[in-house]
Length: 100
Image (cartoon, rainbow, N blue to C red):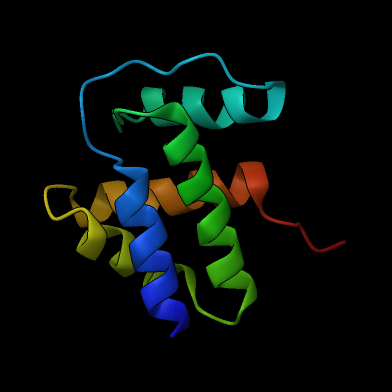
């Protein structure tokens, strides 16, 4: 069930596309900038940010980063597995709670 949640949310995020990021809050802009630096494009900044938060929820529910990347890849078939791993890493660095 949780896997379907991340797949659905990341699919909605529509990570692939050509649009540039729209205005976002400070925390989100770092995430979007990191996606841009890695060449991961998205048509809607808000959906990309939501996908990043969903990755964190998926990881917090006990799934591995590798499982999350596979979910991102499955939801976005034209995204390479390497880019999917990068998306997960960027989400983790920008949105996921870090252990003390």
